[in-house]
Length: 192
Image 1 (cartoon, rainbow, N blue to C red):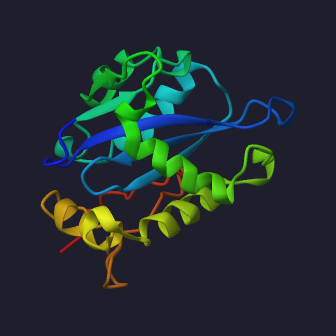
Image 2: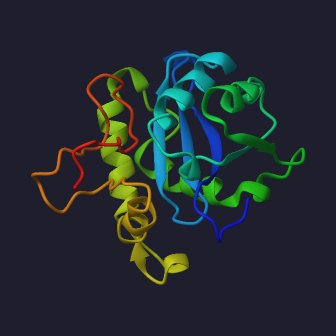
């Protein structure tokens, strides 16, 4: 995916100690803005993981969900569901080449500072993942000329009538939705 165009994502699965259960976290990073999304999964099977990605990204306009790049793990074997569900193409790294999706690998290191591999996800709600993603999105990044993702995303999303961090509290736009509990900004018909 090209970093000059918004809407290309890198994804990976954060696995936690098996004796703590099968829960895991899908981490997704938008390549241009470095916007971070984290989705809690109860299973390591591909179909539920793909369904969660589709549910999370379906409210976004097509330009904001053009493609996803994954590693060759079996958890992403159901990638065709993304094209059928939200019209997004999927790409895969070469075997043993995680540097081909370096943005998400870098983000995973930052996430692991807060959620090491011995974290029991039973005590971590989707809401807490949303809060952590927001914290990560508020960190200045050298690759963004020391701007935060929060400052680099709104202009990009604004063209699609989407603003993940409303400055005006009267606008009915918020992170996540009560129905899905997902961490993506939701489209709001009331955005003026």
